[in-house]
View 1 (spheres, one colour):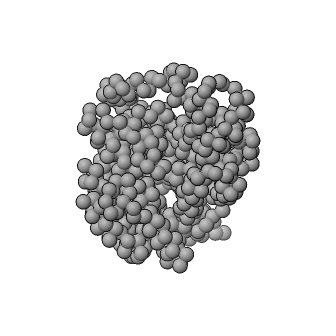
View 2 (tube, chains in turn orange, brown):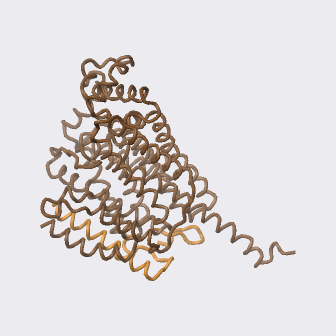
View 3 (cartoon, chains in turn yellow, purple):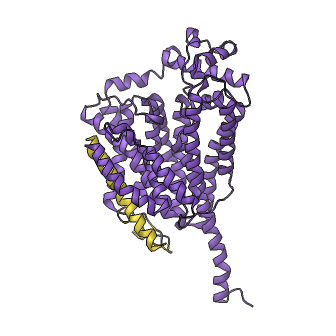
Amino acid sequence: MEAFLLTLDAFLVYFLVRLITKIESRRDDSANLGIFAFKEIIQDGKPDA
Amino acid sequence: MRDLMFLGAMLFFVPLALRNAYVAFLLWGWTGVLLPNYYLFGFMQSARFNLIFALIAIGLFFFGRLQSKGEWVKSRTSVLMICLLIHATLSMILAKPDNPLNFVVYFDFLKAMVFCLLMPFFLSNRLRIHAFLIVLAIGLGFHGTVEGLKVIASGGAHHVRGLGGMMSDNNHWAVAMVMSLPLQLYLYQQSVNRLAKLGFFAVLAVTIISILGSHSRGAFVGMSMVGLWVIMVSRRKFLSLAVVLLAAAAIYNFAPESWFGRIQTIESADTDSSFLGRVAAWKISTAAALQNPLFGVGFHGIQNQLIWQGATDMALALPYDVGDLINNHRAAHSIYFEVLGDLGILGFCIFVALLLNGLYTRNEIKALARKIGPPANWARELGDLLAVGLVAYMVAGAGVSLGYFETMYAFLMLLELVKQQLLSQLGQNLRAIPQERTVSGAILR
């Protein structure tokens, strides 16, 4: 179980840092984090998702 | 097998870190809280994962390869951290001799401070802050998930013993897990994707079970404080109250007898030898600080029998008799007395100022978020939950030697960075107002 969770943990971090590498190489300030995306607020004060 | 897996992971991670300094910083933080060496038993056990990513991040930073570099802002938090670091360095140099732990603990503290003081440069926008929180949550959540599942699988019989490093026994481990709860909660609240939400919630629930499995009384008190504070700061108080009551009912019904037995010893603390041993350590730490008010006796000095004995006479003059326990050296068993004995009264004052500054910064975030409005809701929620983690540390830490815990200093710097983000946003808003008015002609005569 530990080995599986350790692998899953490493995979999640790999997935996240790959995503960040892509976002930063495009220098896209409006990008969000895919599956880890956070809520953003639009002008009328309501979340957009 | 897991060594091979981790070697494979490193083959992917290192090139990514070399390409992007921020990624190296994230991996530095992740390996710092994951402590992978304690889960590896083969040829990768002695690999210095943390050091590799720290060197890459620092190297790229000093060679100017960090994109979207944040600006250094002189703030109360950074000034207090630098003061504490300078003071700790002097305490280490002027420490009592023959203490092998002095430099070891100081060096760990130095690494933690370097990491935190570099945070403003790397975490320059909301996306980067959010990704950093995810990495911390994934790293800390791993420990909670592994141990929590063991507790569930054993029907509550598994006793979490701790790991190593800063989480070396069940109490230290449990305090770290209590501090991870607000992070998981924040990420659950802020995530858009249902799968991510579910994941963070599941880790939160299993981590709570793992904390119960540690049988740590301090962590139980800290966790109760997290529950109360979450109800107090939540905008949906009834929902929060319902969730906390549900969790309390689940604990009451499903926790094993041995856990209740352990927690009930809080009531008989005055006769409990574990507690009285702590009182002895607190008295010695106080005496050591009174003898060396400026710089203390050095890092974990009282764990040395000779240094302990040197403070015994003065400790005997202090109130509360603990009998023969005053003769045997032990750890300080409290973040406050640990810092008091190690760094003296002056170091203790800086440490407490740093903690209080964290809570004050949370109030500043709240006020700024109110001015900005809904776009700053994330910052207010993050400020509230980081403060929850800080309060949990301040409460649960009263019974454990975790004064130099890296995650706590990272929380303090995160609070400062969230405030800086809001100040920058407020500045942009204020600059935008005259332009808008000029365009619309509202203020033109």
